[in-house]
Amino acid sequence: MGAQAPPGLLGIHTNFAGAVRPDVAAAVQSGAAPSGLDDEETRNYEKLKDFFATDAGYAIESATHPQALYGIADSPVGLAAWMLDHDATSMALISRVFGDEAQEGLTRDDVLDNITHYWLTNTGVSAGRLYWEDRANFFDPTTWPTADASAIVDIPAAVSVFPDEIYSPPRSWAEEAYPKLIHYNKLDKGGHFAAWEQPDLLSEEVRTGFRSLR
Amino acid sequence: MSAVASQPTATAGNGAVKSSPTAAEDRSIRPFSVDVPEDALADLRERILATRWPEKETVEDQSQGPRLATMQALARYWAEEYDWRECEERLKALPHFITEIDGLDIHFIHVRSQHEDALPLIVLHGWPGSVIEQLKIIDPLTNPTAHGASASDAFHLVIPSMPGYGFSGKPTTTGWGPKHIACLCGADEAPGLRPLRRPGRRLGRANR
Image 1: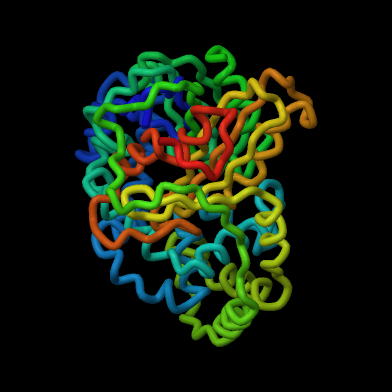
Image 2 (image 1 turned 45 degrees about the vertical axis):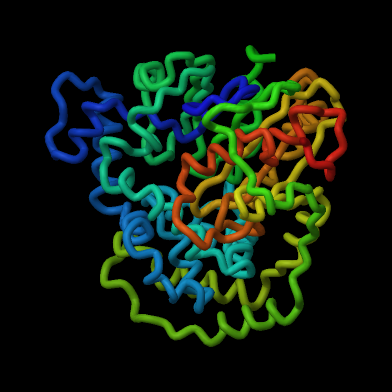
């Protein structure tokens, strides 16, 4: 939406920014780290490389053969396992309430409300098909996670960076991806599902991020 | 999740982003209520209890995917203790609507702030998210003074279910990728901007 900038759209906020620097994105694919990365950029390069190496299977299956996933329409446990299987940090964060670990953030009911909603509407396959529609971007880290590498978000953009996200774009990457960056903040806790897991932090980010547009 | 703020304006978008409804399309906004029949919940419980399990993973961590012990704990809680009706009550307490865009039913929650100059905001989810993921931020954003924030930070919210997700319709053809979905949200007749462009207008009336 930011790239399309329909009339009346004042700005966007995201907590999953499409801001992987192009040379880093290319390197994630080729396997050789670009020279000159600072520590923060190196950490992000490593996180992205790990994600594509070991954790992106769910996205690749949905992007190629979503119609093979009959099992998630037929078995609640199959659907639940498929929905838990995300990047390693998210999977751990969602799974931990069913083990013995601390229960900050999501509760068992939170997790099952979402899975049950998918089950009752039988939308596991139809929802995952979004990856098939967008398949180029899930195979090609050079255009991931930006929907269109050539798209420029030319309206004001606010970016919140949560530490357990798949990657945590440094401010310089966010400035490059969003020329009209009006807000950039790194949070102390929270991950890919910030509104669900850390609603107070996310709400405050949205308030602060858009304040200059009022 | 990403969120977009839009400015109420009387100007109808007419550019490339505008979605063009077909002549046969019903552009009304219909109220929608969540009501799951009891037999669907009974069927779910029976299926959980009938699960055929694979063997345990051959590693001592989650590197092969969700662990057997995690899934068995989840299944036990799901079948024996979990109550969907509690979630359904939270959903029922919110105003739900469905409207047809490009031939597909799009479901959305629309919560207006009591603060009339609140900023209109569309809240968008991804996989494996849903409107469920956004429920906890509705009150903090629409009713900020109850959460230690200022009335000048208030938002009016539209929270759609993406095509193929939740209570929205499922596409029967290809061409429903992110660009198309973004067009839906930006279109003048979209649930995102339609009720927001003219805050004084009642929902339920097509904006033509």
